[in-house]
Image 1 (cartoon, one colour):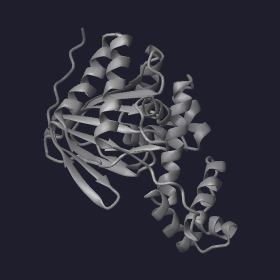
Image 2 (tube, rainbow, N blue to C red; image 1 turned 120 degrees about the vertical axis):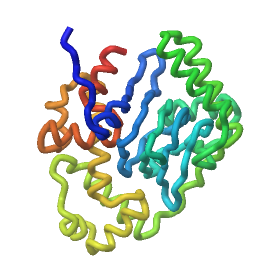
Image 3 (cartoon, rainbow, N blue to C red; image 1 turned 135 degrees about the vertical axis):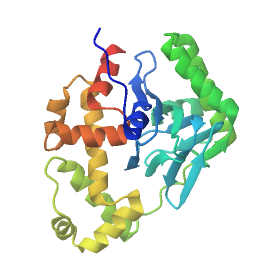
Length: 287
C-alpha cells in the first residue's frame, strides 16, 4: 500500500482535521443529513428551502443571522427556518463538529398537522436553544440511518420534530400586501431565476423593473438577506444539488446551472454545502 505523507505544516495539519459527509437516504424522503467537523471552512451567506437543525457536539460554531451573531457550543441546537439567510464559521481556533438534519417544509408540515399545530407554515421561534436532549435525538436519527434501521430513523425523526414544534414552534405571520420594495425584490428574484445561466447586470435588471440599481439592491437585501449576486450563486448551487441528486455529473451540472467550469462549481458548491459536488453525488448514488 502506498504510504501517504503526514501533513508537515500547521495549515496542512489543521485542514487534515476537517471531514464531512452530506447525504440522503431513500427510506426517509424529504430529509438530508450532514455530519462534519470544520476548522477553517466558512459557509458564506446562503439559505435553504427547508429547515436546518444542527446539534453541536464539539467546539463552537459561529452563526450569523439577520441582525444577530450567535455562538453555539456542545449541547446547543441551532434552528434555521426556510429561506432565512445565514452564514457560519468556527467560533474557536479548534473549529466545531456537529450533526445536522435538513427536513423539508413538507415533512415538518406533515408532523405539525399530525400533532395539532396551528394551521399555517410552522417556524421555530428562536435560532438557538440549550437543549441537550434534542441534540441527542438528532444524533440518534443519524445513527439509525447509518445502521440502515428505517423504522427507528423515521420514528426518532418524527419524535424530534414533534418535540421541537411543541417547545419552540409557532406559525409564520400571514402574508401581508407586499410593499413597493418587496414587490420589486420578488420580481427581481423571478427574473434572475428565469436567467440563471445568463443573469442580467444590475442596471439592466433595474431598468426592466422600472427602478434604479440602488433601489433594487436595497429592496433585494431587505427581502432576502443578501444582494442579488450572492443570491444567484446560492440559487445555482440549489439547482446543482437537484441535478447531482438525479445523477448528472459535476461537469454537466456546472454548465447547466451557469458556472463557467467545473472548478467554479466545485468552489462555490463546497463553500455552501460543505462537501464537494463529487462527494455529494456519490453519497446519493450509494444511498
